[in-house]
Image 1 (cartoon, rainbow, N blue to C red):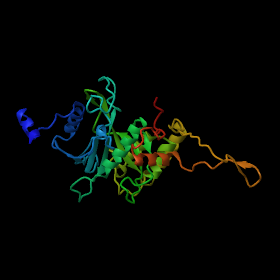
Image 2: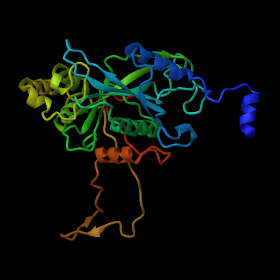
Image 3: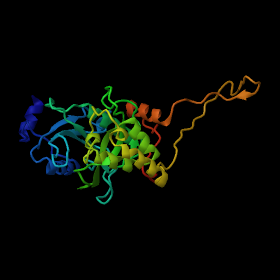
Image 4: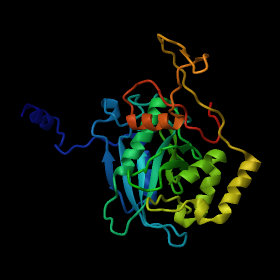
Length: 319
């Protein structure tokens, strides 16, 4: 009762809510411009905030019901928007405090568009888990995600039997760069893709593959809506796409700017072993690829404080 008495003495109502942090309010305002009829969308919130020792870097993920656009052949879908990669508070609890002219926090937030099933009355929550995993990678490694980047995931994004098992990053079709008190924030959309589309992005480039996805409504359309039921890749949907990709590879080459490697040393009792022909052979190298390391570390989360992932490669090496 003592705590209640103190609150009453200070004339603070029991249902008092603290003010919305300035950075978060600026992002909410950007969302309200698109969804004026949804002032209080469903939200997934971190149970224990990251700045209080919790494992999830994103404070909130809002889930909006987007009606789509019949004229643009955009289907109804769920629109997920993250809050936490940018600086929401401006007091140094998560991100270094910078001026309004420099990017806020990491300078971006994640979004995701998931095709809405006719029978769905509430958005699935698995995309929030996916977005938290990507955010953990960013916080852990310090590498940002930009439009045109790709992420090798190697399993269905919703853990189903879907062919949508990898990711391309794109600029969100509706949310443009937003000014906040702590700097500008862009919105980078997660786009689910098939294995063949990932290989095309790796051999050619992400923006080129995104352009093909945009012109094929079944594959994503202009707003790049992910359909986990999609069974055909862009090369199967559009016979001309293969020629376009091949021509792009020939004319542009790949925009992957480097190869990442991790080196470590361990002391072996026997550094070399006799080979079958009498020569010496070195101990076998680890069979795991960079992509497998990325996937494992993304799923492991941010338990370690030191970066363990190679950079996700994109349009150009960012210095």
